[in-house]
Image (cartoon, rainbow, N blue to C red):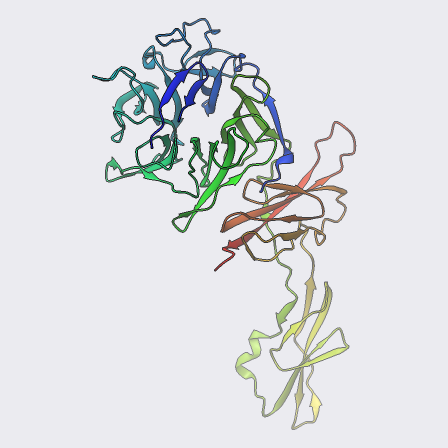
Length: 467
């Protein structure tokens, strides 16, 4: 059954890891949050686009027939200026939220516009394209807007070809559900409900599709707290994984509505009423240092084939016996044997040829010096393949950094999670290929020195727990 939607000053009322979260700091965005209601912040160029009901920026915010504030799309840039994002969008009714493709050339936004025969028109979705002059043109309506259903909080994929949004279509599981539509053959496909792994009998709103494929959303229907909490899921082999609740500080004892993460998960924005009765925008940040220069771990080889390529054509095992003498102590039979050296070091290898007819050794002309050395690097010891839901240990104790006064070991697990320590345990929630980075930080000699970091990475394959 579809639920009615009533607009009020705090947006809507609806009627009848888990991650290493400790690495995130949550700070209220004081330049945006006004004590009224702001929500759904996302970056745009050198600033932030968000929705607000505040009129503190010197412009008159729209109101409904009862003189209650409605939402308008605003833009804050790093110089501190706040202005309407696109004044021509203002309809003296509700606008937003908004979402952009990764290249910032395509925009989708929610808006209420008058409809014939409708006393209170529902929110609908609209698209626009950005031209060479930075103007938004080619404005058009989403093909699957509904004269009765409300569509809002859109999220475009990075390539702009997949759209997620919340709607209370007639086929929903209850309240608002998350839907997906894909751009195929020049048109959007019929929206599909993401199903019970994502949606519930409650309300799912504010989806955000991360560039790496993780889907975040807010819901009041997946536990008994009675409020909105943030969840995540991922599409694997065409199926959505059962949604998982984010931990603190993403979620709080209050309502948490919308979240956005940068591609590396180190920065973000959060909408919550955790510190007041109104929705406020918070910044997410970490102090995890960048490991952008991480290099693949080089393998140290101990097994070698000993041979002299120049004499291969003249080998005659009927007339001669061949062997290799290593460090004058160990003799290995054969003219090209494979030998596993026991450790690093310098090895002197001499080819010995015994002449059966003369019953003596020939004077050796083949001598090789082999040096086996460890590569100076941060070494990750872990399985190449692990299973979803099974803890895996990552060990840095084999790192070889002579003369490097290491005091901190930092881990990026490739799924937006972090760890710290010589050895750490991590559990992956979804299958996939992940690049695990290890950064070893040197103790600075004085406070003004920037700590040096050596970093390397290892690829790990995570497979389903039930193959």
